[in-house]
Image 1 (tube, rainbow, N blue to C red):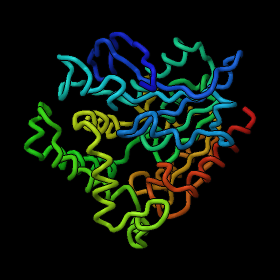
Image 2: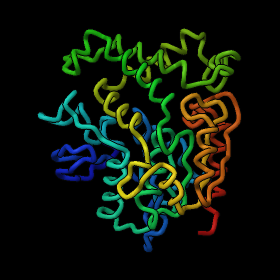
Image 3: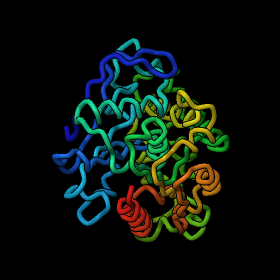
Image 4: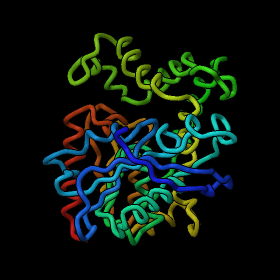
Length: 338
């Protein structure tokens, strides 16, 4: 096991349920300095686990473990932290309770403060749902978070994004093997169907038009090869109930619902941390115009759009050009005086 477990005990969730013996899986990179002043939190994304984040960590990069203590907490529902697949009855499988972004960040805060005694974070950053958690950190703990760089994500899931996810959900649960979440084997037909719905959204029209999947750094033999090897291969490794639990978290993400705030605008205006908000030019989930609106309501934020045709997966660590763009932004932000 290449990660650790933080025992949260019995926790009360925002939606009203109590989850017993809750566990938060995490991995750290680098060493916490004596002043505990070099910590960065880098949350996971939809279906991703900590090792899926490692592409943005390395020698000479902004997230350099020789300089920073980087904590990757795994979201609840991702199969390592408490999830439908690893929680005993009565909250097992389809009975797993609904978890919000607010819950995830509240538990991560406990990890950071109780396990490590950290009072200030140099940075919070993340991709996709990790970006949503980044916004939530800045709203829930404004005195603790010095800087944020959410990339390819948003402070609230848009209606259009919700509709896309309804298609994903319908494709997965239509498999008779799903059995209302009480399956004895993974519903592989549903997982494959879900992957193909996802495939039309993860990359841009230009990406497919130019057959970028056949060129470096991907190098698939054909479109069908890409759909099977990349997309179906990605989701067949996951548990269906876990995917649905995280999907609910994604659909219901909204920092405006944080206790003490009245609206999304109110929450955005209260973010004090300097921010670079980094959408991808052709992201079909989180288009730049949504982030442009958010930045207008933030006091110290800059919009910086990732160019190119990779759409949402500009933030997935597959394309060296996009990785460089994100890393450059992180280096610049970490050099900002706070």
